[in-house]
Length: 131
Image (cartoon, rainbow, N blue to C red):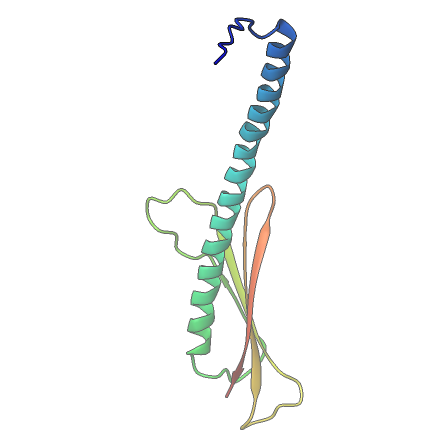
């Protein structure tokens, strides 16, 4: 059995190349964090807006059928206390579908929620309702 006594280390060039490769990899990893944070923030806003729209949709669908069309409305949903949140604006519109007459009237219910100051975003929930 032969014993190898190679006590040579790495050259300066090899160390510099390894450090450069490691730096590029770490830079790519660190640059992903702000992008991920923005995505999480945006999806949280979309989830809240969708919940606000669905809540109003259920409320509108459970009310008595309107006598006259169109029915329009707007409000600002209540935000949970203690949550630092942006303002959400909610609007809704109920219109009668053309060609439908009593007693088989159909109505289109549309709820729109908008939020975001610098880059406004919108969520729209739409449904049909029979008399």
